Length: 154
Image (cartoon, rainbow, N blue to C red; front, side, top):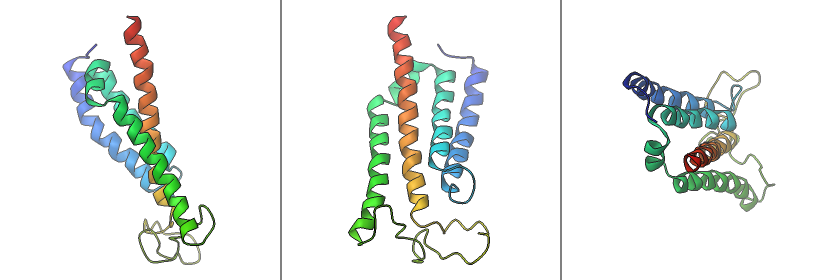
């Protein structure tokens, strides 16, 4: 069932802001409360917003269950791969191999509170991103499966 044009327009306007807020939570997870799970849940909420505005059938044609399964798998593979790179470098599983290297997310942090520099945290931001991708895929997939059950019963 589609909602009114006002609801669809409001959803179209809010959708990018919800996505940006979700990605903000994921990217700033090593600096603030939040992270991959919370940000992924917010991003999945954007998909639920579209489903509420346009109806299950319209969104299920655009965002397939296979695509969401692949998204979930990509997040899991990226998470494990980040941990396995540490083993390949001769460190322990999940060792923070980027910390202090000066590379991506590896800038050293001085003594005292972190002033909010995104380029710190080592592998933690990468893991947050992987978890965010996995949670986005998993929660969206759960919602689509739940709603597909209501479609079959109707």
